[in-house]
Length: 387
Image 1 (cartoon, rainbow, N blue to C red):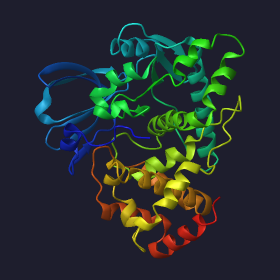
Image 2: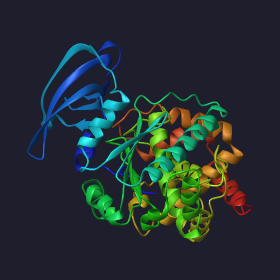
Image 3: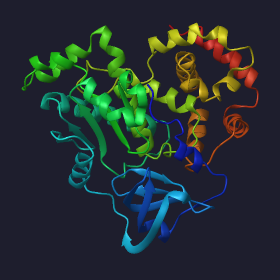
């Protein structure tokens, strides 16, 4: 369930209190930026999304990558009158392939580029799974009054043939976590990265009408459910950040972003169309929530939920994820309209602008009520009825 949202040294340095949100014609112009990081110069082409008062910038590349560039890493920048235009799907695929080892191929769907070096059958299965999730995600929020935009870029998912090759590639983003994290969405690259969950069992899967059914059979086993849930969870993060639902690098409370992704993550492998499990009871996180109840002092729920560090602490992560799912589940089921308005306001937060816990709580109570003690009591009472 983890994804690289923790602040890197570069990102931490770029969290700013004073900024200029670039808009109008300036935001449409192409910028040619040279940055120097780790002793290496890199030329980037894109548009400036946010400009810090000290001269640092947040640059959106034509390939969808988002670059926080502190002033001290900025070598040069110049703009021209060429309008900003995202890379076409074929060009984005080619650019992604340059970042990967040899041997990767491309499977295209309506909204996704599946870049893979595993079997064609598995790549097609991932593409179909993600297209179903895409349709369900947009339908779900449209019916709840939240207007989403179409992604500006094709959505990229990179699929490695093995856990070991995935871990070797991902180590620069995940560190030692690459050995235990099944897949992740990168806010910086805008890609989901994972590996083939069928492993050696995929050797017996051949093409034809029965291929997807065979993969579903392998991945529907109880021991595989959490693995599939993870790649759905990460794809949900990608949809959230490409639909206008949340801004990449905005300071969204972790309980919101993670709770929403868990709300969508339960896989629905039995249906060829649709996605029937959105909002279903997540058994794993219901258990995690119940086991964590003694860790929440009475009246301290919201104070605890505002602490993002709990999600990064291995000793507290299971409890934090369980509680985030439970709170999102409760709010969706009992205060859906108010929660939707709260989520709309979160979507307006500016990237790289830090929000303190006081500001976070103020925004929450603005839409969901000042009496957090009553809210907590209602929450605990409701969750005792969930089975």
